[in-house]
Length: 395
Image (cartoon, rainbow, N blue to C red; front, side, top):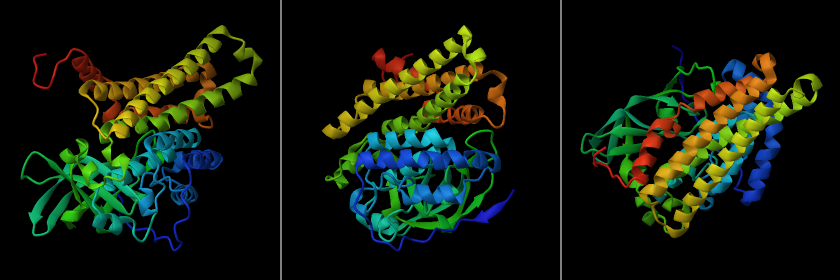
């Protein structure tokens, strides 16, 4: 197993420019698609994101998209983030996944107080925060903070971050602590060797006896119940239902990948009158397009639910929360099925290493293993909510 130190990229020496509008951020993402597409095969083949791509994403603010504008970040809301990740997914699945995961880490870290926010972004408005929330480490309470140790895997984007948010059990109660640790305080073990999303660098981050002050620690329970909204009354996004909101944006890269696969398939088939004239091919392409459209509609409904609760500064009702997760899971499943239809339409040519659709297929299959969009538990939760059953009620 290869082991490398985690080094922190240099802070920006330039003052923060005027913040781009939502439309400008989406357009910037759209303009990056050819760059991402040009490097996608290399990234997949080597399993490493080219520095050209990382630099472009970082400079555009797409690795820290939801850092509040008051801190010099893009300050994107969830709809803008969704649209940006969708556009990036049209170019490269691994790039879009990195942007989505790292921007989500920045969003969660932005719930910290002003002292911690200044430490994270006071000298580098583009500082990047990776995150891994399942508790894979422990923490000892000491005067003024926690001493954190453990191994967290997989941690997407850990080779490109300045900070890492990790979940730890303190032993004090059932709640988990989310400690934000400088990446330079740990190391990365090269453990990510999979068939899809290969260039996300989702390796294992290791911290051994690292002190984390109290001001850089969040409560998982307080975060998921919207408790940090009162600490940031002038920032509406801090009132979001964190898990549902991030689950919706999680599927955005998959939507972009599905659209990219459809575009490529149509382009290839338009050059083959023999194959495109087949009714079975036409059916496969039509089914794929309809599945992609349905996925988009489900995700937009879920996004609307998230935005409505943010506007009211409330947490979603149990039924709405369950439906958001169900919408995301069904949308992801539809996108997976759409890509399978496109593989069928292209025939054996789809499995050529030069065909981007097979890369989308592999990326999609790996992405669908994410616990937030695994269908079965989301179906059960939604069914229980529809039937009025609460936790602890008889099945």
